[in-house]
Length: 202
Ligand SMILES: N[C@@H](CCC(=O)N[C@@H](CS)C(=O)NCC(=O)O)C(=O)O
Image 1 (cartoon, helix red, strand yellow):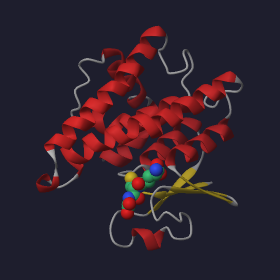
Image 2: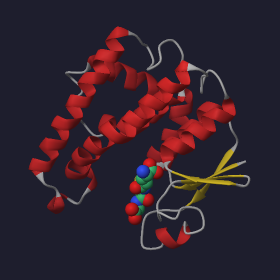
Image 3: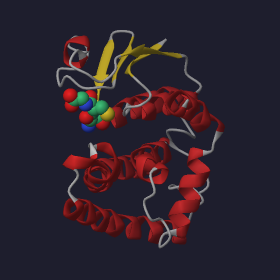
Image 4: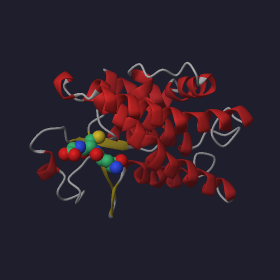
């Protein structure tokens, strides 16, 4: 049984979604935000953050790495082999290093921070940076699809859509990116995503 430490209202959402897609039994060990978070995860994540995963003797941190592990247990098509495995890594690293920093800059300054701590200029810069990345994604989806790797839905879709979920939920302007919007709609309305969203959105 996978043990996912965290709460659905954190990046643990992505891991819950991946476990649902993979059909892997899991339990959520509830660790919420607040002053006790670091102490509560001290044994499973030296970064003092959520999520963390325990799978037997294996302990992992980093939400997208956790998802790659969950997908590897399920095998193809969720975690394909060969060149497609490399494409999964490409989109996963792109999600973490290109999409997420821009997404977070926009998100913190539009809906995550208390209103008095939001910086409108930082929000605009984050939105511009995110739009640059989404233009790349839009071009990729125009050339193929319906999923990131083509015909098969893979963990790459969960990892990138999981990163973009907050902007999709919180009013980012996807108007200039209709293919990306359609792809996000399809990802986030899959039965496994809905099961995870139910835990998060209640
Ligand atoms: N890159 C990490 C980021 C983990 C992270 O920042 N988690 C947040 C919750 S979504 C957290 O634990 N924040 C509490 C803190 O930083 O004290 C991952 O993807 O797992």
